Image 1 (cartoon, rainbow, N blue to C red):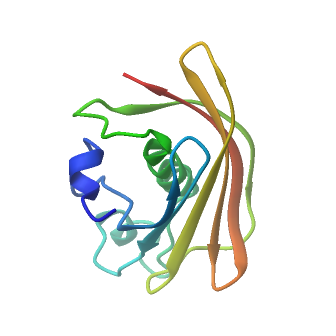
Image 2: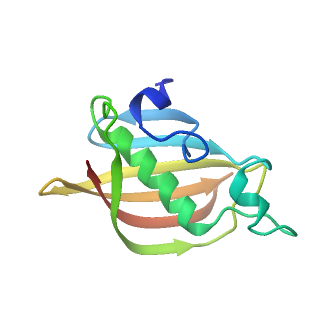
Length: 135
């Protein structure tokens, strides 16, 4: 899938998924985010040692979860409804190519529970269980 902006309603600077590598609708998604030095949030987090804020790593996983849907979201947003068991294991730095893997664990009354992992070159950066909801 190459039409990221056609699937998610997010736009720069808050579109945090660059590419979909693998996709099994309703089952799992593997996406990619290349962290670049020019990203606005890195300018102040932190000026002497820029790193991706943990909350944005979770947002990347939530946006990747939007691709579990079989079709485009047609302008609807995917809202992050809950975060469980988030673990931040290593920093994500400029130049890192993050692999974002999400797998559907279940659906509950309009919510999707997913398990997400962000890695870089085989090292775990972040893991979490997320609840996401379509608008």
